[in-house]
Length: 108
Length: 181
Image (cartoon, rainbow over all chains, first blue to last red; front, side, top):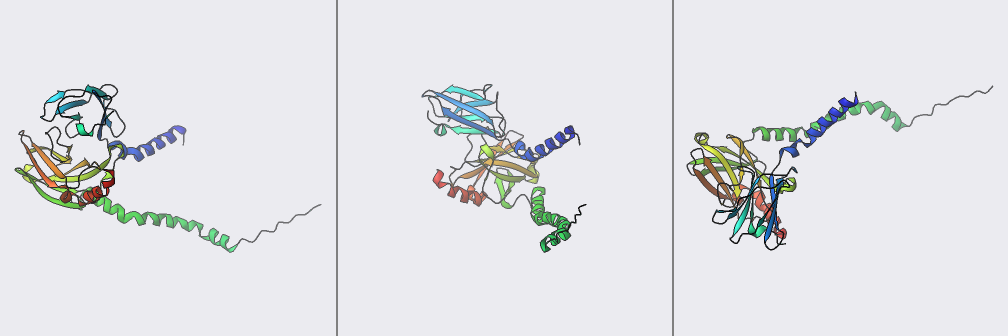
């Protein structure tokens, strides 16, 4: 068996072994207050991939969108803490959302 | 001129047994997988749907003019899915007459704030759809499971059932998480 064929077999075994973990990629989002005024949210997926360009909206309890945003190239978005009560919605498509209530955001 | 003779050492009884029977170990290697066969066939039946929607049928749930049959895929506590946290797998089947009318089915613990935040979406055939529901360990055991159906006509209908009815194993697991809350 040539080294190339051996490599192919190893790659196939690797893919078969890790296929289930690649299939599951649930959306994830984490928000923390970086100071008294600003909140930074980081989005991504459970397979380790980032989420640049994915929508992240800050929505008031009355369902008005307070800060419409998209994650930057580093999969983060920093916004000024709204005065009204709010929650953060990481929206990677229908059914692929993460909701973070203001009460669940860590203080600096 | 020197002469050397070699006296073959007499093999021990254990050695003889080993030499005589070692090739029969192949048969044992064939027998080992047989031990896993019952588990394999039960898993295959579960995934194929021969045992119904899942290991534990929750029942038919009326959601507005539509209904769906819900089941726990596995009758067990949520499984840790890497960094995404504990997840519970539910399966569902839409009623026969609503298959053509329902566009999407969502599942969430707690009442959704909006259709956009209706929870996880069911994917797959309407006869057997699946969804992986995140179950935060701080979820209250008396929480409710909300089902949201979105129709092709733009209508939205919701229904809820107690989590204890949807998954007693999840509630039992949540009760053990008390120290973490």
